[in-house]
Image 1 (cartoon, one colour):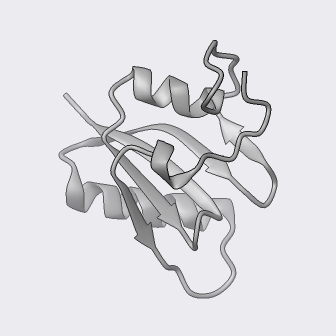
Image 2 (cartoon, rainbow, N blue to C red; image 1 turned 120 degrees about the horizontal axis):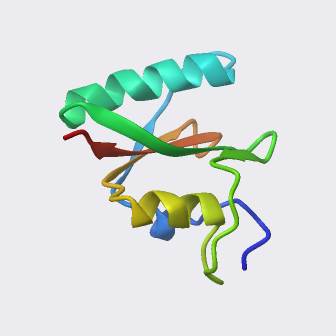
Length: 99
């Protein structure tokens, strides 16, 4: 299992970059990512996220895959379609379309 929660860009499903000027805290990053996701996917559902600065991620689960972080395996196994990478990966939010 990967102990490092940081993914490579190649691991992410359809990564799109967003640059948000100024200091970026989680709540602002989430709000901007949700807004962008609504412009791309119908009724987006947030599956997982990663905060590089604090090395925090959600969901905090353990998955059995050796080459990817567990939070990303979780998102992919639930139909992840879009990854929004804010400020060069400071935050990553992974979504799928709603039903």
